[in-house]
Length: 198
Image (cartoon, rainbow, N blue to C red; front, side):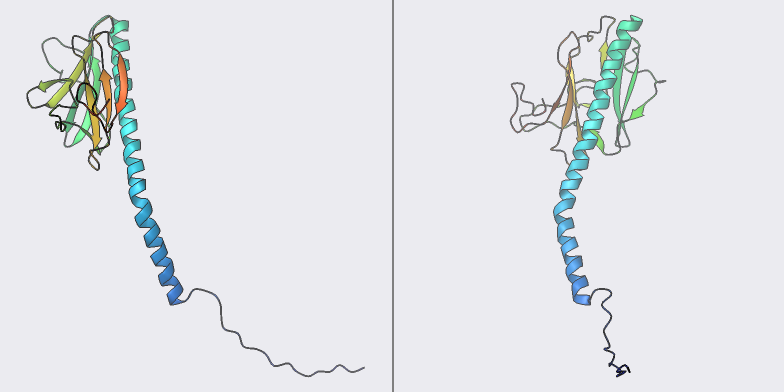
């Protein structure tokens, strides 16, 4: 038995590895379109996340000052300031002779977090904590808690915004003289005090 040993012609095939130029251009265009759709949503998400974190830090700082005041039976305060467009806070014992002591340890809230110092479209400031520059709502802000954990006659709120989107707001209220703390966010309609962050 002899095998038929006819040689079969070899078919030369083109390499199918990789993409053609047209396929690469289409892929880049699709990725560009998807990025253009997704990036604003992602930036908004990160913006809200950083505001929520800063709001939580402010709320916890106020709780800590209130708790320390009750524990130590002295007045404690939370101080806020903006230095080089960075919001900082400090929790420390209050000094009666100074609006804010010089030797406090400051903590940054975030590189893109700002205190809302502008008046809203109703002509009302969204940040109403006691301020050293009370007339222009700038400079240093503070809230004090006495040995009962009550405010020292200073209720108000601090409203935070980001430098990317000033319409997204988060606020922390000291809403009563007994030191009730609560958090809020922006709303499309103002409350009875003509504020949008509540």
